[in-house]
Each structure stands twice: as C-alpha cells, then as structure tokens.
Amino acid sequence: MKLDINKIKELIKERGWNEVIFARNLNLDYSYVYRVMRGQRGIGVKFISELMKFCEREKLNFKDYIILR
Figure 1 (cartoon, one colour):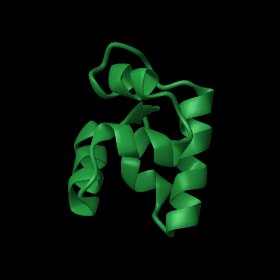
Figure 2: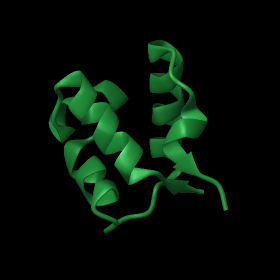
Figure 3: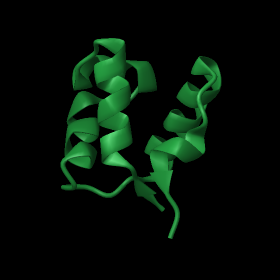
Figure 4: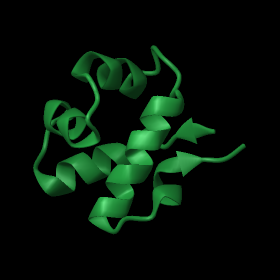
C-alpha cells in the first residue's frame, strides 16, 4: 500500500490548508506527515489508521488516497 501523494496534495489545496493543518486533522505530528509526503518515510499503521478515521469523518473515500499494489 502506498499513499497517493498527488491526491493528498489536491485535498489540501481544495480545502485551503497547508501540511500543518492537514497533520492536525489527522492527529499526527507534522514532522511525520512531512516525511511521508516527501517519500522520506513509508506510511505506517498509525498514518493509515488516522487517514481512515479522517476520511470517515469527512465522508471521503479512503481508497481515493491510497494506491494498492
């Protein structure tokens, strides 16, 4: 499983957010989100879990933001 960075960036832009606000909405540390967004760190269970919760709260399709391999 891989994060669709472009879709995440679109979401952030559509909402008028930056990565700091996105991280807050995921209840994750900004430095962690920063590294994931730049490919410096793989997505872990915590990131996936928080992204799933976020998508559920916001009525978004989680599958739109990941790439299954």
